[in-house]
Image (cartoon, rainbow, N blue to C red; front, side):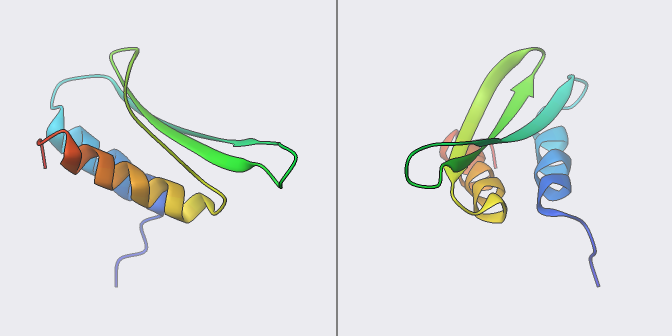
Length: 74
């Protein structure tokens, strides 16, 4: 069974897509009038390559996987 977190899965995938680069995966809760949302993003060499937001943090990281596939690199 795979016990990798959603953030870890995205970090592993991004590391495979951008080998030899400095890959960072960040997430933060943004508060708002309607409960806010969770913002997740992938930075490669200090440049943001993908962002995703959702009320559920797990779905925000899943959205990052989808954004990587939209870039045509997965």
